[in-house]
Image (cartoon, rainbow, N blue to C red; front, side, top):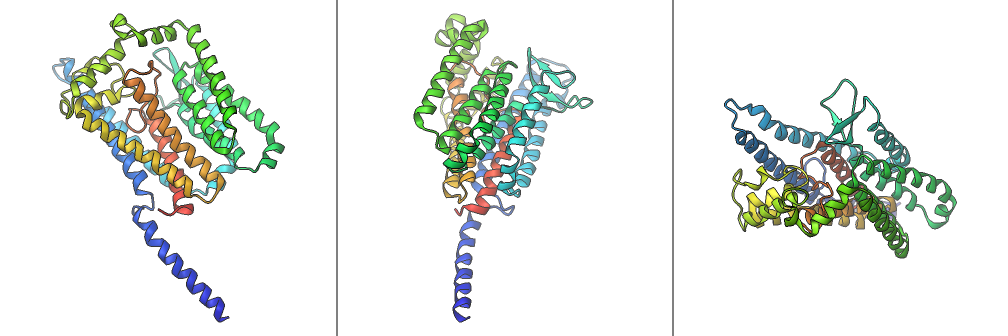
Length: 398
């Protein structure tokens, strides 16, 4: 009896020693301060740049009585999505991960259904010859991009399979291949929207989750080779995609057409210098397409310079490093696979956007995480970080 009490006292003392360590890395909301701080700062930086672009666009139109609401609307919308994302992250961080794992396949199927609905009236929204968005009939202002959600549901689904031991995976291989076939079908639907950049990122994220789960490296290499072969065929089959690749190698030859985006982005980097032109003083954003979304980093670098761009990269690096750290300390295999894959997803998406913006990759339409304008991307990323928060609270100590 005495020994039992002594063991309980020791256990209590040990738990008391752990609590302060965990508290140092959490906010009053019980969420990891590194993840929360970096994601919020990146979103606020993006909102600042978004407002800079929209406000200058309004002044540039030389309207006698400008509608200030039009200038503030993108800023207000993005901040509103930030609040929604934070609330969603807080809720998801309280949901037990085994419960999420149980519903991983159902979430994937639901996501595929939403992607199918982007092809069907009255659910589809067509913009610039693309139908990537889903809307609820009767609520025209509220739209959602299901392909952004597929990045996360792909991770949850693939990790749920590889979290089993080898013998269980062998027993489930038939059913798993059926679900993988549906997942590949969803990727094809994303490609046909058309959104080749997002499709490439979804498949890359899925391969990363499989690799972390134990899929042999040579199999990953074979999948990447086949994907590259198919991707090349897809580029050649579509004239506008082939023209993007050609203009990527010789942008000045196509200065007025397909090379326009690359040139304007490079000019923005050159004008920014070390300290930048200052808030609202950037000129390239007047001519740069997608200055608030796909090419937002060019606008950041022009107005905030090399210092601002480096700060943006630092915060993205913190997010990736923190996710990988939480994954390495998680006790549950499924938690390690999910959070590790989330970290790689954020890292690869950031890299794809940055090398596209700097002219090392043809335009692929991939947003910069947390910084680019877009509620779908922001909310899904926040939900992903909410999962990482939950794993940190229950399975990792900073």
